[in-house]
Image (tube, rainbow, N blue to C red; front, top):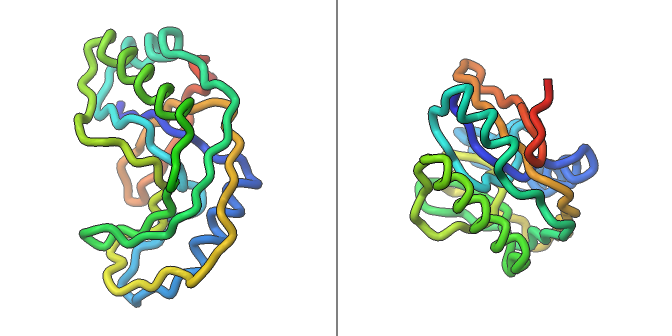
Length: 168
């Protein structure tokens, strides 16, 4: 299974992410992220077998209650439009580090580049214009999800666990 750990929005947060996405001026060739795929990736895991996926659910720490504020619109290199956190909460950075330690303990490889909490709003967005101003997205975090990526077309995501408990 191709897996990743993510902050997964509830319906209210997802609606605010979509509103932020709609505030941009997009070029014709843009590939907008569909609403059902908007999330913040904590760790990309790649291909993981069933046994390792189940082990993830019982060995990784719970997410402390905290609030993430996505308050910056940015156009990253390679035409990736994002909504990002200017000041990620220290508790979220600590969770990210704890998850990395748990993943390493299971023998899984972790990306080494600096983590920047963000939601990808679109790809192929060269020339897009972010809104002059927008309402920051306040995201109360109550957990994270283990998500399976199903190759497409269309690409789709399936939440298979939340905060360490496998859902059937």
